[in-house]
Image (cartoon, rainbow, N blue to C red; front, side, top):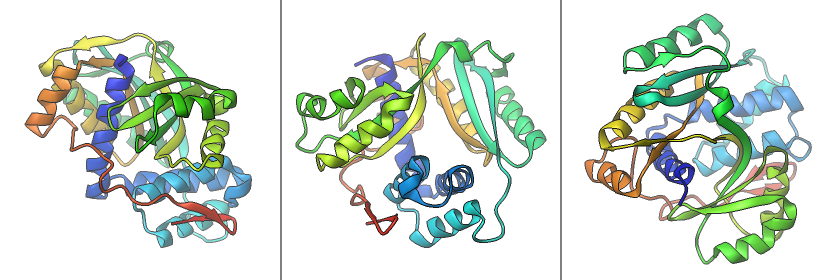
Length: 277
C-alpha cells in the first residue's frame, strides 16, 4: 500500500469520528452552499453539487439542512454567505508539508486561525508555492469493499478514466485525473456499485516517513487546523507505516477510530432532481 493510501486510511477513520461528533456537518453544508452558488441548485445539472449532497447524506446530515443549504446557495432562500476559497501552505513538525483549503467569509479571521493552529503545535506557515508543487490534484472515489475485488472494480472504471486502485483495508480508493472522477462515479453507479465519496483532492508526490511520535505531531497539527470552521480540507505528505497506524489505533487517538463499514448509512439515490436515501 502506498504512503498516500495509508494516509487516506487515517483520514477516513478520522472522518468517522468527526461525523459522529457532528463536527463535519457545518463543513459539508458549506460545500453544498458553495456548489449551489457556483453551478446552480439542480444536482442533475451540477455534478459538484450532486457529489456534495451525496457526501453529506453518507455522513447522515439531515435532509432539511441539506435542502436549506441548496436554497441559500442558489439564492432561493435568503441568508447565504459569500464564501471565498483561500489556500495556505505550511509545515507540521519533521518537515511534513501541509496544503490547507479554506472556505471563508472573513479572510483575516481564516488567516489568523490557520497561523495560530500551526504555531501552537510546532508548525509554521510557508510562502505561497513552497508546498503546492509537492501535491498533484487528482480525482478520488472511495468504494466500500463488500463483495467487490480490485479486478472487478477495474473492469468497471478503467474505461471511465481510472488510473489506479489502492487497497485501504475496508475500502478501495480509485484514483483518476481530477477531470475524470465524475465519469468514474457514473460508471460505478451504472454498475450498481455503492461508493462513499467522489471528489477532487490532492495527492502528495513527495512523502516524509514518520515514526509514532512524528505521526502524533502531524495529527495534532491537522486536528488543530480542522477545528477552525474556515478550514475545509488539510492535505499532508506524511508517510505513516502500517505498524505506526496500528499503534495509533491502540492508543485510540491521533485522529483514528474503528474501521468504517459496519454502521455506514445506506446509499442515497437520485430522485426528482435530488438525492434521497
